[in-house]
Image (cartoon, rainbow, N blue to C red; front, side, top):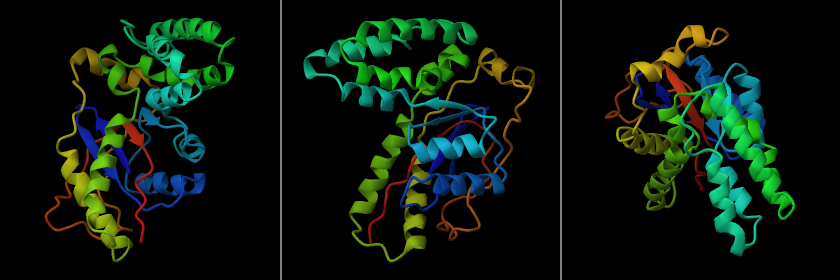
Length: 260
């Protein structure tokens, strides 16, 4: 599934598709379907570090900036650190990103300076853990290019992760689903309802300024897209099919697997 935030700051449910693997081909097909329905490349894509997904984003959305989820990287980092040191390492990791009071290239430069201090401090003790940060540093700092008030909301994919929990809870009570179309219709209904309560971003005139065409001369701001793919079964009758407005931030993740 994929969600986005448009230039009005509203969270938008963009698409849903079946998938049993996280291969590059599977993700490329999903992104291609969104493009076929009218979604142009967003300014920023937020994802975990799945190799198939990252490769598909690079291939299908070459003009979009790509932010790696800082929460996923933190989990990978802490998993490679002894328990007695996890608290201090975690604090130092979040200090790379927190309380940077400016945005743009200056913010990225500040984040890079902090990251270098983190790497220098912890590499002698935990080189494998620190490699999780060092190897992905550029992608971890992308969100700092955007307005300061948006930094904490666009550096992770937590919103979509919480939505998966609600989907699993609803599907679990059914046990068996008769087929793919019924599965997609049910999950769509759950996600469409959940999307009504998603919190977007506050778009002030100052915050909107970086999204102007003059700031991104080589990028097309995305246009409207239909909310349901013609390849899928029609959504339940009580679900409105109003067009979604242009997405700015998108966070794709793997949909929960439905076992038969």
